[in-house]
Image (cartoon, rainbow, N blue to C red; front, side, top):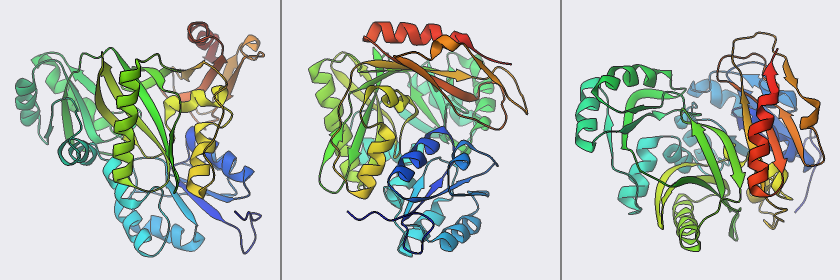
Length: 387
């Protein structure tokens, strides 16, 4: 492997389509390997903008605007980091010879819940919960009645729980329909999912280069309103459930192809494993790997893309807790208790330019025996606040 210097005529470039806190960590790892980095987002001063060599603010759902930047920069790798981007632009860029990670077809499938669900359940024959797709409120009511209460309602394209809700009775239908319009992506069609009475949720970080597939230790997580608030590693799983989840994750990612890290989510009930969702990039629950592994999910993502060895050391158990804002603030300040910075814990501040209620602003990371780490993370997150 040959490494070059950034900002030179022969430098290797990556473009991040989406510049949030996860993209920021990817760019930091890319710069450690001498890559030239370009961060793109829909708003100025996004977290990854602070550390990239160059940044752009564009409407990434505008095909021509996105292609114009790609053709101007001529990147070696294009890394989609969010759902709200022009898939047509990615297919056209790939046809022109640009390397989309993992590939344009995989991005198209995984960033649309309808495509990935039908691909996994109907083409690959993998078990999922019962589901249906609707485009009107009347269709949603009919689908929910058919599947039975409760049901989970999600836009086919959204992220971080935006637009997601649970319908527990007929009186929730109208509110869930309105909430779906909050999606960051496409709310013109919704997926209605039967509620699985699971024991726990788990993320299997699955990393592929051209030679091998490896897995990180399973990550347990807790969600509220469809968005992660706590994660811990390793998740205690039976050998049967762990093996099943890894086999399914490999089957799906092999079928999608390409190189990089995939966050594959499952519901687990006893020994049964149900596919939930998949992201073709580092996963928010995987922030815990910043303290538990010698190579975080972000470093492994870059290694896989570049075809480097995927070996890493799992240091031991840990937990993460996300801090979310309580209010809107155009000049945000976060107050953190000094005790959160210790030999076995620290805080990562995402440096978002403004805040609104529910926006993720920081993460607490704790290294300890599993139960202690999670208990500490729950306690520590209460010692951070908006000022």
